[in-house]
Image 1 (cartoon, rainbow, N blue to C red):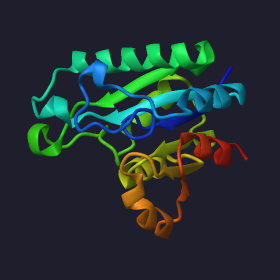
Image 2 (cartoon, rainbow, N blue to C red):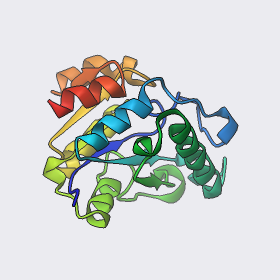
Image 3 (tube, rainbow, N blue to C red):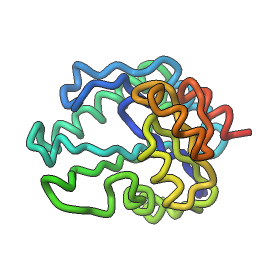
Length: 183
């Protein structure tokens, strides 16, 4: 039984950053993502997406649009990397404090990670978080993950110095983060 996972932010980590992505046809995978997910699966980890989707709270798109983008990503991963490249679970926060009030799931709060840990009976201390924003890394730390890593794809390039100052590892992309964290 797998009891450890990589928590992955979505936009800027798995797919190219598109502000408020909600149209599946605009989804573009970042090169190497399918291979990285396959690598972490072969190492005995689940791949779980944890993503803030404030566009739902702001009324930009409905939750079914989030599901459509996730389905598109799964289809793209399957086509480029086979079944071992598929995401094992999807968690999203449809809230924004200015529109829906506070919640426990919006990163940097750890709610999505803790819910996934409960759903999959994970040992959170054997899990890792990979993201392109400080809020992703802080969510991993707040949940009790073994480590978090910033990727310079998406918004990560602008948060590199801050991440390093806070003691987080920084890598070019998801492939690099997976390689580093598996060591």
